[in-house]
Image (cartoon, rainbow, N blue to C red; front, side, top):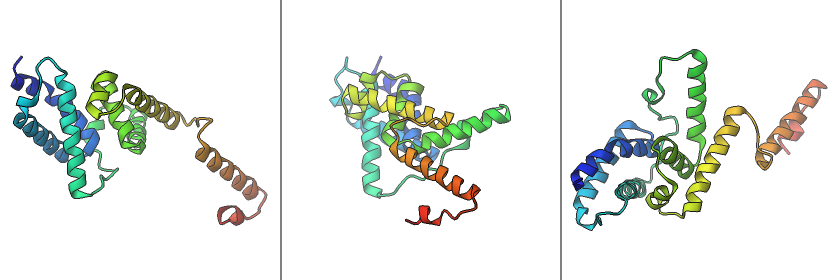
Length: 191
């Protein structure tokens, strides 16, 4: 397979990764285009027989980071294309997808990127580690933590080691007790 054939074959996966990074369809297309231009300009540096997919994903990720540094803008969390989650499903299914979208948007960027690349794109942990310039153990940890956090948010369960959420739950319980007793909870909230 020629270099250009490999570039064309990987475009769909690059689009998914770019969309998970930018969370904006137009920005994702621009990012893919820029990454492909960079890859074409640097095609002589690619060593045939090595992992082309990881090489392209790393170019795309580095281009994204470079663009962020240049703009110093933040990505709007609510800027997820509705078409990404569109399906002719039941009301409950649409609510579940909306909840999943919100939960995904709350994940740290490195965990969200790792989860998308492994679960949606089917990338191996080794390829993910190479593409994101981290150790294989770190890549596995990011996916594990993302899955665990999504499960907790989606099921409403709270991991026992989540200290902040435990404190918030204890505060809510104390406020509920005082509210039922007709007492003010202002001293709990403003102390």
